[in-house]
Length: 205
Ligand code: TMP
Image 1: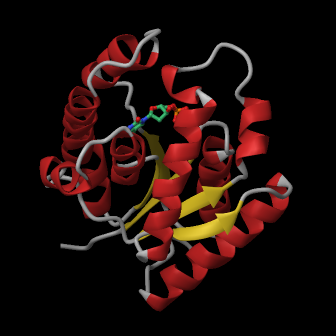
Image 2: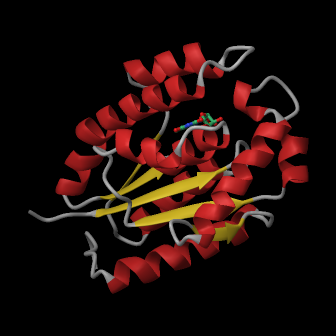
């Protein structure tokens, strides 16, 4: 069966991930590819539970429980959205995926190997991009009412794990401390090179 191309975009809270993921989808579609945007936590039942039970709380629940709920949401996301779209030959761009669990729950002390195990049903991305923004910039953006994860000590620890994943080759780093247009341009360049090298077909010439 024809298989598409799976990209995930990772980064700290307020690093510009959502803007960049959506821009990437638009840019790919404008070039004649068939790309779709999606995100985690999802808008499904488990994703909604995550927002209420994990993200909106004053105090964090057990990080292992967080990891299990994110893995359940991801499994459903993979089965109901990501896989069917890949099977139709589409490019799927996911705003966060398994590396968010390794970074956020891993930084909170959960064993990364166990996180990979409980996410076994998650399809391996063909390309995983990490948008890096310095902590002082994130701190200035994470001021108002945010999720429980937006504490600056949490963001610092999460960034360390993301940078480790860059060093191990799991993630491709993009410098996010530039204008939206500059980041989008570099992201598009990296993605187009990959699509061309994998011979991913366009809809229109
Ligand atoms: P976002 O909707 O702004 O991306 O926020 C989702 C929050 O959930 C963000 O703080 C990161 C966190 N998160 C995890 O801790 N683990 C995960 O596996 C995922 C997908 C998100």
